[in-house]
Structures are given as structure tokens and as C-alpha cells.
Image (cartoon, rainbow, N blue to C red; front, side, top):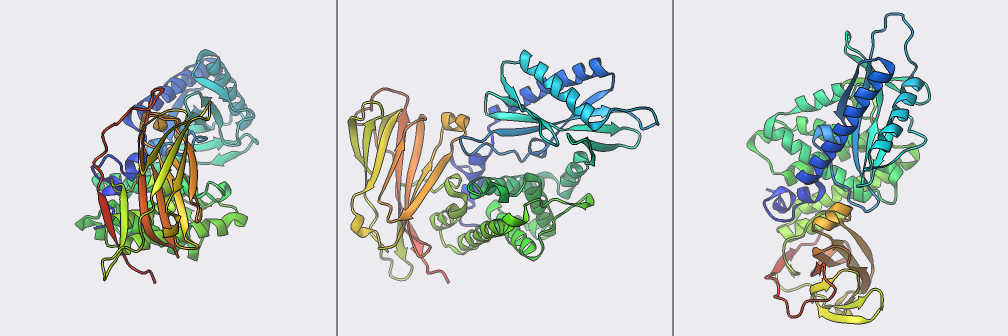
Length: 469
């Protein structure tokens, strides 16, 4: 069993699955919105142009692999296909550009009737139009011709071309790869991989793998290991297997064929960005193998955090002291962190804390400083990772961020969302964790800090140090 398995999809308050998965309320809200748009388009387009209209939800929402936005500037992405039905019987039929114009025009009408819609993207994309909503999501509307007698579909492109495309067929393939609980685990694995892609390619968006590419790679790997899975396997171990398969497959051959149309290569990462992708994939495999080799939960979680960053939860502790496997002695003294709190408007100091901030209002500046810098080894890397939690940060889509540098002894932040958050200070040397100080920060929606609040019941964890080869 994976050492950090409970931090992937266990019963704890913080898991990787919970951090990347939309809440039930968020999913219900998205469902209400796309149903409203689909109903409007079906009725209006049929009334105006006379063709039977149907819609079909597709993409991550349909697959059950939707992840929440993990950065402030990201949005939920929902895909609703619009299908114009007619038979190819020799009569005149609409051109692809006509269908796209009709849908774009009706989206503008819908916007005028719905205050939740912020804008309609102009110009539309080559393969879809887009309605952008106020509440951090957008709905893409690819447009298809459906011939019911042959059950065939083709996508209307803005350039005037028809593109053979059948999202229903590949979805049916995905559904039939596995059944029941196995399918649910596969969906979780896809979410983990999409979470990795969301944080690993921030500086290199062109190298980021698409959702459908990750979905097919995970499904084919999952199917390959189906027999070994009959005895049961936790999510962490299953993810390690999938990552190894992806690494070996893509380092050998970058082509990933559509499982229901072998004329289509699903890997559309440009040639000039392929090496960047492979570098990140290698880092993912390294982290997976390091986590697999670790001896305790804290060490495994920290190994995964190298690639999952702030998405990967750490054990509910305030200190992780790394000890020699043989002697049992600490590798280094834990860093002591002083936190100064300033009013953001007046810049006046309003508090000072050590290793935790038990209560602080919103709109304050915080300066975190290691006050025993002599314990930090020369050339050691110091990581400062913010892990946000709570309804407000969930709604905004700000789950955290990470900064690092050689002997980076200070970090500054500000309070914006109510809830219990963490500033995690991790000291690494030669790629290995030497010590971790977790600073809990309780932000309250008040104008002044509470006095003498109760201390949380955190305990110190000990993690065994083993030298990596």
C-alpha cells in the first residue's frame, strides 16, 4: 500500500482528490447553467432555421473527470455540443460557416437575456463558440451535423471545413474500459494527472497535455493492468503504475492514436515544446518513484509535493523532523519562523507570532522570516508553499502557490480568504527534505485579530531520512 494513500482519497479533511474536485454545489450550479443554455439554443435555432436540434454534454464534465480551477486566472470549462440534424439526400444543406454564424448570433441573444453571462468570445474559435460567465466558468459550444440514419457526426469549423469528429464514440470507449468501482478509480487517476498538468505547465502552457490525451493514456494503462488490479490497489500505487507507463510510452513514441479512429493522433503538443513536456514528465516519474521508496506518510507526501505543489496535502502536523534512519538523530534543527502582521492600508504593525498565526483579519500583509538562519545548510533550497482551504478560496479558485530559492529566508503574503490555511516551509538539500515547518494561519472575516485564541492540537511527525541513489 502506498505510504501516502490516505492523502490521495482517504477520509481526512484534506486529500488530493478533494482539492482538485469540484464540490457538489459547484457541479449543480454548472449543470443548471449549461441546461439553461442548451434549452435556449435548441428552441431558438429550431424556430429560426427549421432543423431539428439536439445537444450533448461532452468533455471532462461528461467523463466525470472535471477538476476545479487551481489558479486565480483559470475557469471551469464545460462543453455542450450543438447538433443540427439532416439527411444527405442531395438537397441543399447549410455550410459549416452558416451553422457557426447561426449559433454565434443566438449566443449573443442569450447573453442579452441572461445577466450571468459576461461576454461571448469574439471572434469565435475555429472549432467552437464560447459563452463566458461571471462566476469563473465558460461554456464551449462545438457545432455538428448529425445524420441519424447512419449515426455519423461531423464538426463545423469556422474556416469552412467539415471535420470528422465523434465525441460520443470515444466516450463510449472510455465507459467500456472498466466498470463499477474500477471506473471510479480511473476517473480519480485522470483528475490527479490533470491536477499535475495544471501546476506543472504554468510557465509553458504550449507544452501542457490536453485532457483527452491524459484520459486516453490513463485508460489504456489502467486496462493494461486490469488483471493485477483484481486483488485491489489504492490510488497512490495505481497512479505510480500509470505514470511509469506514460513515461515509457511517450519517451519511446510520442504518437497516441485515438482508440476509435487510428487516423487521429491525440498528441497535439507542438514539436518545439515536446522537450519541455518530457522534462516535466520525467520529474513526475522521479517523484512517483521517490514516493514509492519512502518509508512513511510525511516523506511520501513531500516527494509528491515536488510535482503537485500546493495541490498535494501534507499530514495534519505542524512540524516534520527528519531523522537519520540508523542513528535516529535529527538531520537539522527545525526552522523557527516569525510572522509579522501589518495592516495593508496603514502599513502599521498589528501583531507578531511564532510558528503559527492563530487569528488574523483579512487584508493584512504577513512577513514570514526564519529567525534561526544558521540552521539552514549553505546552498539549501527553501520552499514557501501556501495551501489555501475554505469556501472563499474554493470559489475564487485560488488553492495556493509556491516560491523557492537558495536560502530564501523570508516570504511575504497577504490575507484574502477566511479559513485555516498553511504556509509550509520546506528545506531541501541535494533534492532531499531536511526539515518542514508548517505554519497554520487562521484568517477571520473581522477587522481585528482575536486575543488569546486556543492553540490547535498539532503534533510533531518524524520522518526517516534515507539517502537517494
